[in-house]
Length: 427
Image 1 (cartoon, rainbow, N blue to C red):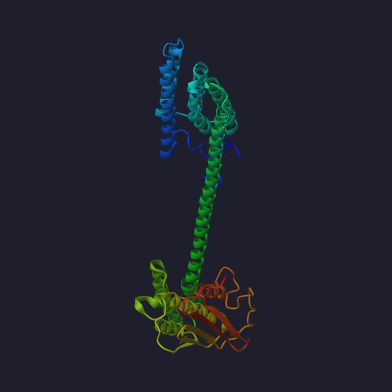
Image 2: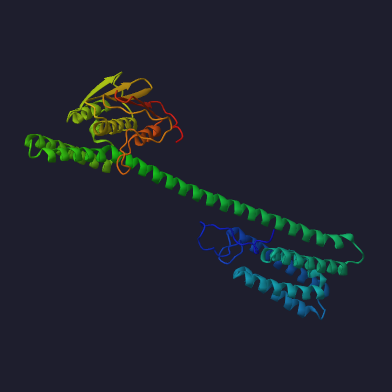
């Protein structure tokens, strides 16, 4: 693996966005507090080692003619190193300063071998600023020069002088490279997690938007669309009878106006909270179904309502789903079945509520399980949702839909919703 300087930065934005500028731990303007502390530590260590070596040389070789050169180079080294800490600048500027410091240090070591151990902070600086291969080459050269300087200072052969500098340099390089690679892998993992999190959030938003659109389409179909369909039928009947039977035509118009008023109430309720208007102001499901049956009993169709079981207060979602189911089923009975009577039966048990919608119309062949044919829907695909909308609404609450029908003998639709929490089946 290459040094972070050689790596392109992992993407931190969604695909297709512009690449971010190089950002490493030591890029200009990107240093963290820990990075600055480490830089300060390395600078302090270098200056302290430089001062110690200079003091040792002055104490032992104060009369040497090399002292002015060594003193001047030491000042240059200290000033350049401290200036680099005070104003980090760009990475390229840091490498230029490192080159100046290394060049001055090499000259000082050649003049006075006691300055050799100032290389330790330089090794860390090189590893931080240079690509891995260049840093390893420079560290090897620095360690070699330290070995030569130690051998010059030794009175005799000492294995430690030969082994200690390379071992220290190798340990420093190995630890640094390992930590750098781990940090790179961790950053890649974090970037992948962030990207995955963003993708999941976008997917959830899309799915939520789609689910809300589907829910709104069902609500509009079972309220406004069904009312408009009834109004259309009544107005057509009134138009046909306007000359021959004005009184019947007026009756159709009054009924259409009543349906329009109820549709307006439904529209306002949809705008506010999407609850059926018949369930507003605390009305229970039984009362709402009775109101629906009375309203739909017209034009040759008689709708009766019957409730069985205890008067249980149902959750709002369950009550709304069953009322919408009854509205959709009655609209389809009126438009397609030719029935003269229909019956709504609400059955409340301890853990289940069921609604049966029966009619004595022409019936239809029962759909195959899992089939796509919708016997309750309109043949025009631009009109009602029919059976799929009813089934989808019930499925969201963990409920089921069953249909029994025989051609010529009417049909019975049964919608069942559990009253205990249940996990909706997979679509």
